[in-house]
Length: 387
Image (cartoon, one colour):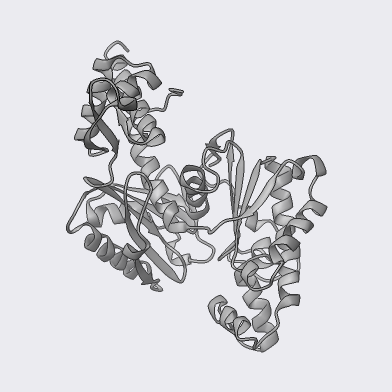
């Protein structure tokens, strides 16, 4: 224990300093000493170690408040190092470089049409990662957003209802083997929820829920500031609660799951059944925009089930904020307001009266970036509340 204590203290110091700079932005060692309570020598050592790991950039000299002796200023790395965010989806995959502040340029995203088989998927993702890491900053980690239940003990995808080619695969391990870069894998909605809490609309909130129905139906929650992952890292599969026992077949094997009733894809299925052919969401959007079809009734049926799902999350988690990601709100003016009204009717009133419900972009590639950055921070050691 004696030999372990100095190492633990170093880890706590390193992570505290990194998280302080992450929150405050440009910081000097003197400022870090004041906010964390650490001594000047301790801050100097921690900053040096973080610089050696590639986690910080030094960006010149500055005097706090324009007075006193100038000190060296540091920020989380955006020039010297990068991470790679990967979003796997059943139609398209996206890969992007990002700074350690979570920021990325949409123009740098590589988009890949998702292959039908796993080996081709791994090949195409590896090719994209190598292209983004061939020149430029040092790449410290990759984060992978995956549409499936992942066993956190070994990173294996146990079930991906909409991408069965991933079933049984260790995506992160395989990408790490191919590229030589450490990979951290999260369920896509856990990753997107983490991104919203870290960099988005829910930044610094302690209690929130993200519901994404753009492909399947996925729900993720932050409770008391902590991402709710469950015993095996698979919490939040509310999309596979049956709401119609005689409903459509779901990718999980059951019938009538809310995923088959309350998503953008289920909306497209309803419209396709009326048209007598299969239709994708993008084609449906173009037809609506051109005035070729009227889908108001189809959206209203879909919203009725989505309202049940959102109300269930409000009643279960008592969040201060619910973020809902869907494209169907763009197809009909007032659709999102209709959803909110229905949620209020179906929720327990004291809970919903204290909860905001807003739209989210559902940025899955930002989720991949967030997964990479969380992995990097966890590799430093345990967190400590320095505030």
